[in-house]
Image: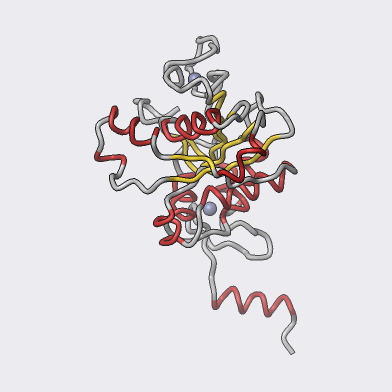
Length: 250
Ligand SMILES: [Zn+2]
Ligand SMILES: [Zn+2]
């Protein structure tokens, strides 16, 4: 008869699991999240001092202002944003694995970290956790919406309800091929609020959940849509943040 431990070792030999961050083999009994402890420890938050609204690193010697040059163009309805890591290894590998490689189990580790570090201090309880939706076509192709998986974990850990209130209209054009002004118009038209969810969002504080924050255009459009349907303050919580305008990594 095979002992439980030996059985696990055999299973591990047959189905070796590698850390998605570094490729090192992960002992299954110790690492539940498909990412090793060393990689999890290298995930870095944006450095201080940061903008009080959007968490953008301001550089040393700069006082935190109400709105920095990154978030000054965001609509007022997007009250704040916070990301719990910088988009560089291993955060980029985790996002890619969750989004494109079908590693939906990663949402557990990523969402748990978001609940701990990624909720903006301006958020008041109770709040609603709202995933940024993807288009139906993309969700069908992938089998799930990664933001929805993250939102479920954030909701569970914070003890707040998740509400799938936003719908995303199918857009024929991909964002990258558009001029910035067209891109803005494109995202403005992108969202609508589900009729049956409207009563619940009246005056409610909302934590929007997405995997990556880049310019804030998507979150801004989602926040405008929610605010025009009667919500209270909207705050984005992202797993990771890309800094496209920064010449050197923070
Ligand atoms: Zn690793
Ligand atoms: Zn800012």
